Amino acid sequence: MPKPKPATRKSPRATQAKPAKTSRARQAPAQKAAPVSPDYAEYLKRYRLEGEGRPRLSAKEFDRLDDEYLELLDLDLDSGLDDEQTIRLQELEYLLLESDQ
Image (cartoon, rainbow, N blue to C red; front, side, top):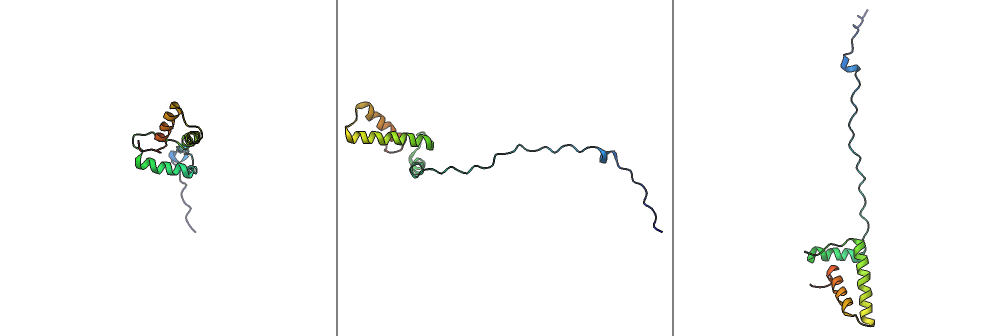
């Protein structure tokens, strides 16, 4: 006949509740890069090459300023620009990297 196993006592450690695991703060899943317009992609290329010292525009800023730039060019062709509009056109050319300033 096999010998009975002696009763084992559980250590006090085994009966204590385990501390809760600390969870890391959940990180937001990596967001996919929003698609950019071909014009903005071209602007980013020009910015990498010759944009030193100029502010880098966001896609939204670029679109807004580019629309304003195109409107001024159309106005220039239609009726010409006054001094203030000419200055603004030059500012936009600088920001959009459309000139060699």
